[in-house]
Length: 392
Image (cartoon, rainbow, N blue to C red; front, top):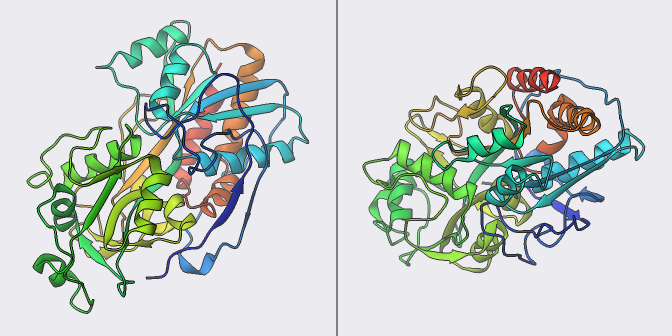
């Protein structure tokens, strides 16, 4: 299978005292992640994308023209959306001719939520919804002056199953086989289960080297949620930001991507944008309805199939990881922008609404697809625009 090739250079400027980290609550830095020591408040460039290697997803007509009210807002959180939000910040700066400053610090989902509830930033990016059990919902309401915080699904980030096996460029794994690999029940590449699913592949009789995120990660949380939901008889551990399976840990998405790239006979999971940036081979997933290649279209269908889990303008989604229809790529996470429905400074509110509407627009959703993300389906982006308009 061909992999989409992406060359992206992101130059970012440090935001205040918020340190940068991976997606999750671990706040350690890494020089190998995209802007792991910098933030998305300055320019980035993109070139060399082979758009023919993956199918483009249709993007609905949810246009938005920014009003550019000026001022400044600061956000922080998810590293999964790093390349996407860098693109959008740059596009917004161009559209507004520099009027209005939007800063985003890549601290990881957990640290972003903590900074938001601690009133250090104006909004948070998170790959997991606020947890009522952990007190995050209550803290967010307190931060928003006794008003609810809303989840705005803005980025669909497919989780690629990446591998490095000489001579194997087209690999299919069923969810059950994949769960056994990551649980440590299948340890050889020429295991009968893998051979049965790939009858034409020349699979080596070598050990499988499994890599996982060593930091607490929203990507790990979503990937293990998928494994537990779709193959719970094999992956019996509840979903968690901390890895519970087999393998060797690597730091952040950039770490696992580099580990797979440099290690023969290895496998891991990483956001699509990191897989394409590092030119890694990606497995097709058979979740019961046939093998599905990761493309913008197949991942976008997963978002369309998600169920609403929030009320009103709170747009939390419940992804459908089990028994997905034919042509739906099942391992997809959604990055939320967590915002106050009310209670933010009026000038900041005006800029926040303008930027979030711009982010959800069909133009920007098409732009971030080129950076390795699945665009929001029109029905979802339309709801996001309506929710943003209701912020006061």
